[in-house]
Amino acid sequence: MKTVEHTLSRLLAHERIRAARRHVERADELTLARQAALSATPAPTGAEAARGARVAELFREIGLSHVGVDQAGNVRGWFGNGDGSAPVVLAAHLDTVFGPEVDVRVTRHGQRLEGPGISDNARGLAALVAVAEALVATRVTTTRPILFAATVGEEGSGDLRGVKYLLNGRHDVGAQHAAPLPNAAPLPVAFIALDGAGLERVIHRALGSKRYHVTFRGPGGHSWAAFGVANPANAVGRAAALLADLPIATAPRTTCAVVGLGGGTGLNSIPQDAWLDLDLRSEDPRALEQLDVTVRAALERAADDENRSRTAGTPPLRVELQLVGDRPCGITPRAHPLVQAAIAANRALGRDAELASASTDANAPIALGIPAIALGAGGKAGDAHLTTEWYENIEGALGIVRALLVTAAMAEVG
Image (cartoon, rainbow, N blue to C red):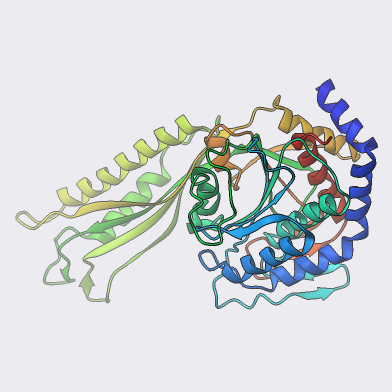
């Protein structure tokens, strides 16, 4: 801890880091304007190209090198030497939870900006650009290169697609426009995700999840004439009841939620299929795996119970599971220098640090053994994932300065 505190103290006194901090503070209104403009550029999960193109433009304008877009759609830009040493990654996700039909225009009401995605994650993207611009403009030098990345597919059905490709596909540089990476590039020494607003939380525990689309299929038929056949709708009900009664661990916290269900074609028809969607979560990989086994057993029991009640001689129903999301879980230990650097940065800025758990782009590197955390990018926000989402730039620059300090500490400023 003393070493990390010493590093932060040295950074705060470093002439060029002090200049970079002043740059961030002076550019506060410009950062806010970029945040609003990015938020107003639609970026549904799977359709982030327009917003990604604008981020790539910004990366080039501020002076990052080797700017490009990889095969997954991630935007990459490099700062520092390119000698093949392990980089530090600073990332923010491009996508939002809102579909193409949602009006993402931003309105301003005094100190408040309102618009879908204005905080999650237009704030993270604007902060990403602000940190890069400050380092370039003030000619900071670092021992390690820094990869600035704007990732696709972080939200919902994206299943961390962008960051998984960024890390696992790091040797694949054959795509046109792909940011060049050295052959046999080493894994990053640290990964920092900027996600939404806030200044207190340091997310170092990756909340993992498995998401299933579960379908029960049967013969179906007329609701009167075929009554007695195995009914997929009944099986969905049985499954939901069994899952609701599962004993759920509290240490580590583990959850199973039915998040959607449906089926049927008409008021006088027994459906041929009915479905439910499940979201399983835990901070502990073993607990998540055990929950997965338990849930699968409950689904099979629901199918068996419905089949036992059917009229003799009629076909049984079957259950099909489709894995639609698999987010790994894990932890960057509190004692790791990356976590300690974030805590020390908060302390240096006069703020307490709250160690927390969440599902972010940091999940993927943690699962690969890469030290990773996620940080808010300053300011205050509310109504996340709603069309009424808002952001207030209260101490917004301070959140960007925190990201600057943590990144500089891990990249080893010369």
